[in-house]
Amino acid sequence: MRHAIFLLGFICFAGINLSSFCLGAVVVNGSFENGLTGWTTVGGDTASVGPVYGISPTNLASQGRMITSGTVASDATLETELGLTAGRLDTLDGGSAPSALNGTGLYQTITG
Image: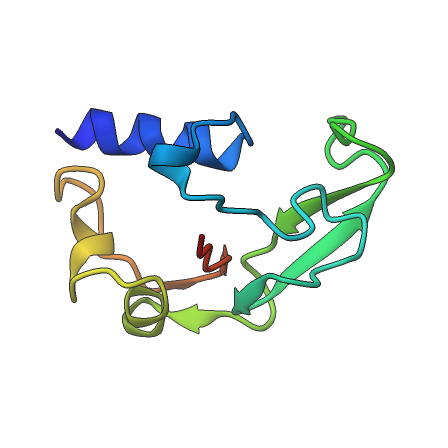
């Protein structure tokens, strides 16, 4: 079931027209050409113009980039903002690595 939900989310995000599933959902500023307009940031996220780490933007000149340095959010804040269960970020690797401490997040609430 998890894979089906992810696939459906990807199809909706990619703009593939499945109106009965996506219900007309639209991603605002999906290519970041208007900076972070339409996006919510947690921590030190930025939108960059031009290639970042040698990767060119997929649309025109801009792309989103998350930076985990400087201003960051605690793991608890990230979990709350991203709608995750408390402690979830500590389990993404199966719990074998040290616990998550802080980071950045970038998201958009999509309604249809």
